[in-house]
Length: 440
Image (tube, rainbow, N blue to C red; front, side, top):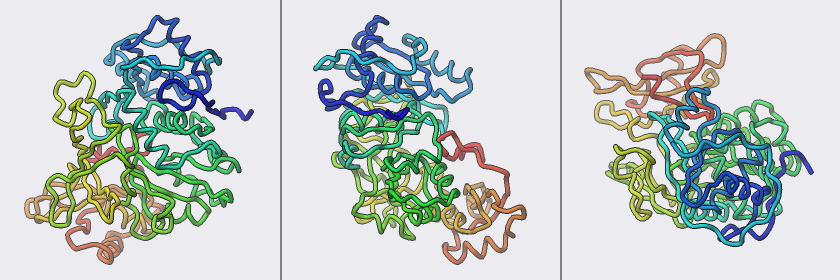
């Protein structure tokens, strides 16, 4: 068998239709540690077959499983673990052996994941296991995951996108090629038909300029995706579909579908995240005249609040029927979600609302701009002025007048940046999310 290839087996316990490899051994390991329903186990570990098995085992055993960010500096990771409490897990083996599995599950328990911290300190999100299963089963059905295709699983398991993917496999019986990190060679394997990626990884694939004859599906989330790399990847043979989700929703709540593949690679698809997954609902709070408002969600994978956070707002309610206030700004267009950025990042200049992502998408189409972030800065006359912070694609940056003219061809006057800065790189986390708070 190929190293890293995990093939689920039929006959999973309780609602899980499939058993992930090593489930029986992971359950025995939890029992040896003396852990039972409701007990908390805090784990700091890199991606491995053992951690995959432990995710499902904790769900079956009703354990509270806390995953800290393994890629943080050791001191920060230790701080996360200490703050989470519970029993600190000993070192995991690389894989658990097979063993007997129960047919039922223990009620209770939860998966506790840390947010990425792009808008402030990371928070521990509480995701009860029954909601995790409901969200993963709905997403697997929406993605049409099946036994006859293999997915590349290369996102960190301590992030919602990585954990949710392997648990969807336990709902659909989908084989996975598990990798601790993304490598280009994996996506060219003829039997890898799909992958869950972040935009940074798609950029690397486009730069390689190698055709993808197997026409894999790439599900892109975690950060906005500009049209240029999307179209370039499509030209190489990839079927690129963007998704929208949060840690607080156990990852995916919407995703573009096969029915819209031609539209997905069109000029105007950069902020289109497709239709809602069945079971999820969306409403917009305080929409403006263009139908843009703050996104609120409720559905099968809605979190049960923030663990240990007494200052959390109403969105931290444990009630599964309450609305989750995401802090994202967007609108619905013909049944599809358009995510325009964080509501607290919207720039208001001269009374006009400006979504930074709209301006960034235009600038990223200019050949002299490799990366860019748009922010608002205080302005005595306009309230805020639009500022572009860019990374040059060439040794000599384009002139400000050239870029201003470029923007004027595609943007309204109030959206055009009034100030420009050039930097060597932009602050991004390990999933490629822009940490905009470090730019102010």
